[in-house]
Image (cartoon, rainbow, N blue to C red; front, side):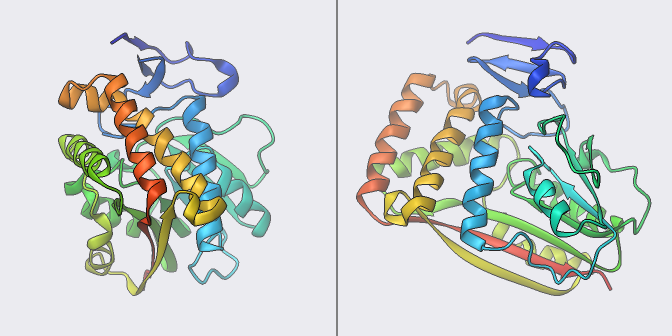
Length: 293
């Protein structure tokens, strides 16, 4: 497996991906020491993240669930390509939106005037003052936050949120129902690879309780069924494509954890896709909101 380290400024400048990265199997991966995020930070991942965003928006039918009342400052943690921030900037033009991520994946040009992006790792703590934001949110950080760091992470979100403000978190249960032997084998491999990074695929089981434990009130959770594959229509097809692209991005971690070559993983993913298309395979997406008293 071809690996080398690439310093900031050496990556493809047009893609806006300039953080220090590692290179594996033709893909770029971040080298942030205090973040176990296993997926890449290259143009392929930009495409996957935007596809994932479109699928989620089709499923939940809203850009946000917290009862926002003209927020003045909002923070998106793990903002990725910045697509959600750009859409929200049009909804609330008087609000200043800030996005942070460990890699600058968002386009440099064409951003709304009320959007700013910063490269930062929330697991290191953020330099914003207490109660700085009216709204703090993230979407799908289960692959970036180790199991033992969810409590301090939520505590940091609460610190950043103003009294009366809202925190919103969208997470997927990383395991899905349906499929056959290939799906079960692939699920076990991916679960083990995540666990080797200290990550848990069952954050959705406890996130609402962790939010209450951190002092949030009016905590609510909304659950959405994710039907994967063509039986789920256009959205199901998008979810299946997202699944395929995500598995491809996981290849280096799977190889380092199990010694499984990329070709073998690709074949297993193909078999799992065939099983998914033969039956009713689905996952679970949860949206959590809570207010800071």
